Image (tube, rainbow, N blue to C red; front, top):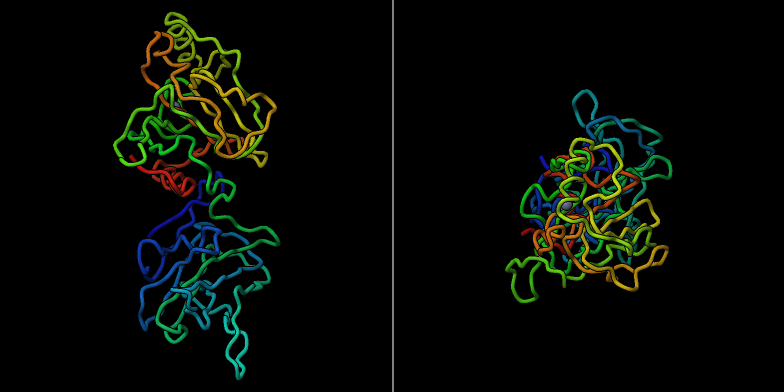
Length: 352
Ligand SMILES: [Zn+2]
């Protein structure tokens, strides 16, 4: 059984299962990615098809909206059933017709159907497509959206979809220690960001280390809430003292944190991103100033790290944090879920 992650910082996973997938590209999460342009498509077959959504815990719902999908631009569904579980058996709660009316010139179709539930609490539901409910043996569904009143039960946090990866052609971390929640002796014992150390050139996927000439870009538009123009590095002795102090006082505010020269952006929707260890800040970046998505913020570096304190190029990387409603991305989540979430957010980033 596959699963996806629900909401911005909900630990509960929403599980979903499908009877079959046309291919890996058309799997069940396409029906839950808040994008009506992508669909779950079943394999072809004169058999029932279904998609099962399981919240794991009871949730209340007042309506479910279904957007039928297409395969090769053709509609696949005449109708389907919305089912709930009662006494361990699925029963048909509502029949959902996608054909609107048939006249002498043809049939008209609905692009979405709103099913009024009248208020139910359930931990799971199923969209069931019996044999005979398809035109060509395929079942395609573009979106399934449960609502409580006017508010949608979110599977993913849509605010994060399609953020710009801050390093052009950057790789996700090689090591688990580069992901959020990895143990750290400082930062309260936990790593709260993503360490981006490698990128590749246009014509080759060979991983190259970031340098002080690697530009760092804004993940989304917003307002600069911090730009460390007055940053001064520590020397090696100060660095070791600070590090020692922080390790024994992880919850204490320290003036010289190890993020080095930083830029923070408030994206004005509850999301804040931070860019750490920069070697230089772009002259266009000032506190209170606005930034565009993809605008250059500065250049990668090793500020705040021992390498800088020792005066060498050791450890250059971007430490990048995404904060959602005050929690860092990955709070309370398992590593495999974080990886899944991150690849969903950055559609164009590559695993090293
Ligand atoms: Zn880091």
